[in-house]
Length: 120
Image (cartoon, rainbow, N blue to C red; front, side):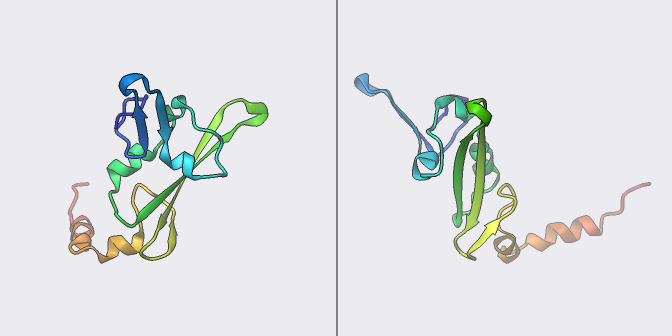
């Protein structure tokens, strides 16, 4: 579904049918440590970009919204976790290093880059 920022996000839900006025981020609502979500938070969120870059079925995302000093500004912290290998993912755009190593043909691209002769 398209967010208020105009990006496709599987975690955003909106329902305006027949007078309803429901908007929510399902990632932020599942996290009790997070501040309440606002539609303006979608402009700062990197979850749609992460999902577009890495569609691993074993990756779970956690979104924490924190308000800044004296309530000024907001920070969105996205953490990723691999359920298959039970480890924290440092770069969610790339995904789990162990899952990437298990994929057939993943080393072929790296080998081709190493053997590439570039003109100096």
